[in-house]
Length: 188
Image 1 (cartoon, rainbow, N blue to C red):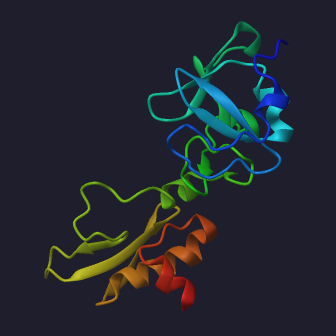
Image 2 (cartoon, helix red, strand yellow; image 1 turned 90 degrees about the vertical axis):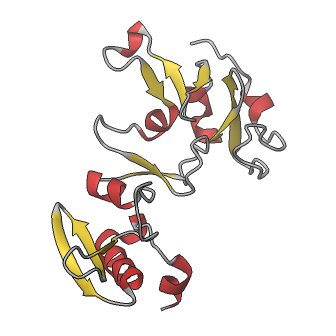
């Protein structure tokens, strides 16, 4: 396999110029050039497997490469984060810091579909501004609810509906929970 980019050149390169990250490349990290522009960040331990290919910047902000015949059947593009974790087909890969070009192992984690949905961003049609908080059609009060493993759990009508959702989400989803009020929930 031909290496397209020298590991020695890539280790410890100053600031990332991808426009997404502005922190310095840490020791043991490697920046991978992307075409037409950008840089992805990986661990040095993964450099040999990753740097042997030409990586591109996907329109949605991920690092991808084209599938080759020796890769066997599958989708036409292979995502860098899935290669790094050897993610099985259908198993979501989530990021702790949400930066799509930060593919260090400490930032990536495998998730179940339920955990992946719990970690999703707030929907654009959300009217309350909080996860799990909606207006009751019956009486117009704010209500809190959460869905775990396909089952909806009503948390009640409360002034603190967002806090009620946060408590239930932390219990149900652990580190995957995307909280409405993370700073107040962590202190409690």
